[in-house]
Amino acid sequence: MGKYPRLFGTNGIRGVVNVELTPQFVTRIGMAIGTYFSGKEVLIGWDSRTSSEYVANIVKGCLVACGCDVYEIGLAPTPATQYLVKRHGFDGAVIVTASHNPPQYNGIKVVGPRGIEIPRSEEEKIEELYWEEKFALKPFNELGNIHDARYLLNTYIDDILSRVDLEKVRKADMKIVIDCANGAASLLVPELLRRARVRYLALNSYPDGRFPDRPPEPRPDTVVDLIKTVRDLGCVGIAYDGDADRSIFVDETGEFLWGDRSGTIIASHIVDRETRDYSRIVVTPVSSSKLVEEVLTRLNIKIEWTPVGAINVSYRILETNAFCGFEENGGFLYTRHNPVRDGPMTTMLMLSLLAETGKKLHDLYETLPKYYAVKLRVEVTPEQKEKFHKVVEVLKEEYSQYRQIFIDGIRVDMEDGWFLVRPSGTEPIIRIFVEHRDPAKAQELATRLRHVVEKVLKG
Image (cartoon, rainbow, N blue to C red; front, top):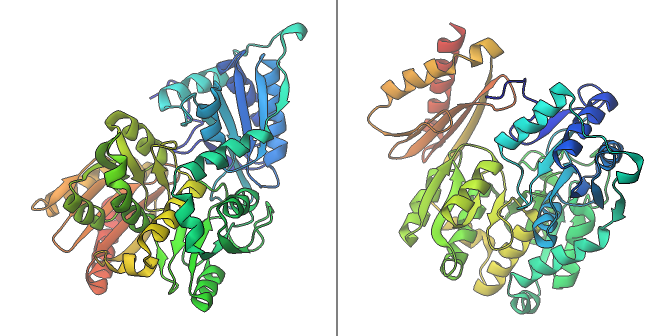
């Protein structure tokens, strides 16, 4: 615990523009970030939100005031900026994005020299600078400069294409549908596919920070146009979130594949070639399905569970030298490229897999064990949320005969299903995830768990 109130959540700083993210707040946090990087070389990029360039301009000025040389990527996927930090040896990056949040939100991520968001211990240093206002303002002759670095995006695309069997992708003559969500994928993913000579139909592929065509989070209820289109055309569809660090696949029949499903398919395909250089380990949060372990352990792959949050997966990959990691929400982390969520890289991994195997995505999906999912959320007060440990105590005793994992709430694995009950990292909410081979039992178990949470926390 830091000695000051937290500003950073599980995925950077987030807030409603001109409510929490006012010009005054952005300036103050920008000065804290500038002081943290004082005198160093920092990349800056942003997503397509109406407020992103306005927030980025304030942050740029603060970085310059603290003597930093700023290299401006502009509108780009979050993983592109992260990759370029590592590839070109920058000291870090600031990314202005609120990822999948609604359009009135924006946020600020701080990335370290390895291309991964800085750990909590470093965030606390920035928070201390913010609260104590110990800003390292430079004199006029030591101010930083701003450089146009948009040309560097070509090296990001080149690296993605170099990581797959491009010849087989081109020979396969694939046709796909992409849904860019009017976000950061809108310009880069079409260019990536053109270079790969993949024919595509693009939906929502112009940047518009109002997100007029669908919300920026890809879910079955938000990508209905994509699902209908791939059913009509009989081809694979890919949906991105607002900053393109996540990609969700829809198979040829219109089946929506959550990220733990697509991640399992990709990991199964690449494991033998990747583990020449990396350990035979996959890292995934405790919110991922039981099927991940069922399928991958048959291939002699060890599963490393982490708390929910992409940054937890990234750092665990580094610690274990794992060859990849993935999340249920559509994030796939490919170590050889950069161990962060990367929608465009994941796109090419899946297309290469389909080209190499000659199989349909639907046929690969059908080989996975079938579980039916139910997701619930219980709204609580902050005071009730603080007593969540009591929920854990009740469930620990009630399900003591099964395997239990406590690294983020409580996860219980049973013979034909599993569940996770955990507090949200950003909201006064308790989240309930349930999967079971029987859909009726999945719903019954979820209802039972909600009753326990409400009874324990609400009386």
